[in-house]
Image (cartoon, rainbow, N blue to C red):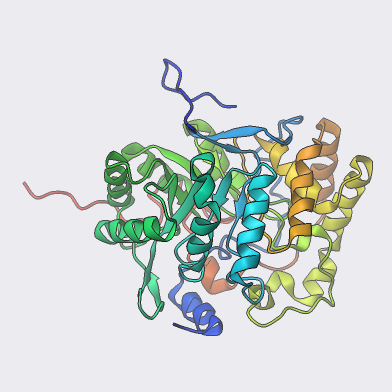
Length: 412
């Protein structure tokens, strides 16, 4: 089954072994940022002016959306939580069961990365989806220097030769002959993005990769990469209470016909309303070290959940479902990828496809959010400093080249 969309004559696409604690510590010190790092700021009340919503763009079951020329289900599924980040890893059988249940319920877009585990998430995704491989879109990521034997993470590495090595290993773990969407997980300050895009372009020519993506990238980096190899999607953190992409990244994606994939669309679970000031975080839960998740911050940020609850009462929806529907209402090329390890949470998330927000609903959320001052940065200062220029509030890549160094001029 093909997941491609035809482009118009004008060329513009149609829009329709280290321990967990060691892993966290070493990654933070290296500034790697992972999937739960990076943009962050403490006051978000001024973030709602950009990225105006387009109401009535729901995510009904069976709806498909476009990331560049790649078609996917309107709601994807993030596969990180099975192995780390928000608590102890779950067993293999539970992971396989939830992934397969997502597909049975109409999800065709699955997101993983080599660093999740490391490696384990890719293995689960490959095994769970092997029998339906031609019916799904699998996205994974490169960008870290991971020892394949010890699984030790040694910082970032997006050198072209390393990208090829990682891609080959990911193909084996995913039990497939092609990666549908291959992202650079974090911008490497030591490798020109043109070299990165060129390496992925070669893999696309060879049929091992179908589409190229960037994660936690700012506008300048996106433009530079797109000039070498078309970028299908950008994956940055985005949700009702994290608006960083609105000032630069979303406008860039819209201009260049690039899809946008929000990670942590439920605010690391907070927007579901199930996390209270007294909720304990178990060993290995990254939220325990994030300023936005202190008991005081959780208490202060409760008005965000209450705002979603008010809208949800009219829709017979939970606050988490409203948070996902809000993302669907923003733009038709936005595809959230909520993740979970629990079947009941999966069902709740998929319920966001059953309704849509109208203009009044969206306005109520935007007007209400402007009155709320979100407390606490979303990540540690060390990790926030490693986000690409323009990918987080308080920074802009306009007139610059982002974190990625410029290519060296060839000597004549």
